[in-house]
Length: 231
Figure (cartoon, rainbow, N blue to C red):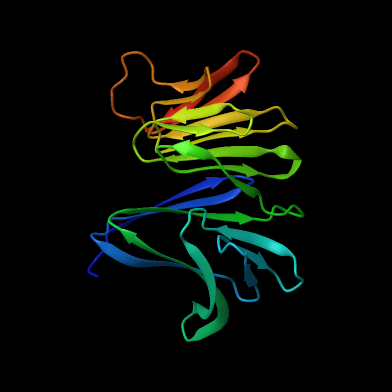
């Protein structure tokens, strides 16, 4: 009950999709719903675990996956409608993400479209300490993104190969492309990103203690180097 302040952040990872982060400053126990309207003519199917909606077009082709990657959230489908202009509306399914929570909530939703004739990226959870969410997204040809969404403190994600990825960033990701050999990484509001003993990004000596805005690094023959940064 009462007004719950709401802040939304959206990250686009080209070739993979959108990561939507909703921060809700609730007090006490609240019942929450996030409603995602499908376009007219699209139909959704909820997976058995309730964590994903596969969205298909009239031909049956899978066009998009909507993920609620953290239990105990569940997804369901409801009839609804959308209005493209005044005085007109069309029937459209609504994917509803519902959960109960105590206090502040930090909720991430993944919107992963099909890329041409390739299906949406696969989502693989990563074990992590100190993270709001840690996942690996795998697209065609083995291209992958490890995404860490932090809560303002150091976090460590453990990868399948036994390596680790560590950061203090609010957002951090590393993109690997075996086909092109072009690897990039980035942080938002973070001072470092490390992979095992390999430093990808690190705050320069004498830097202010507050976390900078965004930073991007690329890996070449000489290893990782920072290529751009901004407030």
